[in-house]
Amino acid sequence: MVVHRKLSYEESRSRMADDAGKGPIVRINPHELSINDPDFYNELYVFESRRRTDGYHGFVEGLGIQGSHVLTTPHDLHRLRRKPLEPFFSRSGISRSWPDIAEVVESFARRIESLKGTGVVIRFDHAGSALAGDVIGRICWNKEKRLLDDPDFTPEWWVLL
Image 1: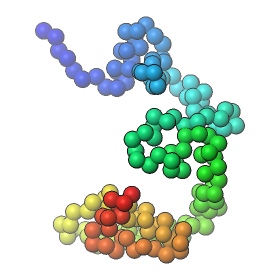
Image 2: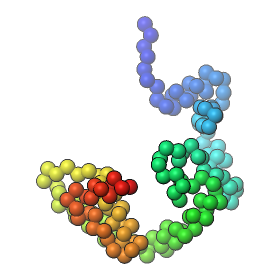
Image 3: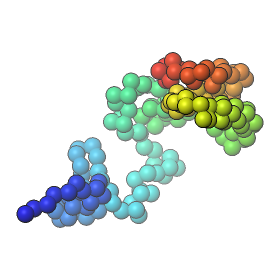
Image 4: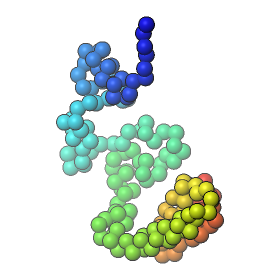
């Protein structure tokens, strides 16, 4: 009697490598490799100072937001688009924004606490997008949209995103 069980990803990757008589790197398809070698990580994922690398176009296909800043695959174009946003994400930029972020997060915590024991079901995808929207509004325009105040956490904001 043969017993079959579902293999974990790591077990199946390891078995593929063993069956093929290969080492820790196995080609999954023409665009993907499976690498089981921690020492190779720093060769594959490099900083610009070592080697300029374009993003992998396959990661952005089908998301419906091609051409956006985050999903820009050509290295130089991504760098050009990233430059105006750097002040917001620098250590000093975050430190300047921290009081505003903390105030919105405290508002979120109070709102969640107020629903405790009420039996209300909280859609945390809606709540999280409302939190993000209020933080963005506070930092970018110095005013909140008050998305967290909506009884359902402004589900249309979540749909918009």
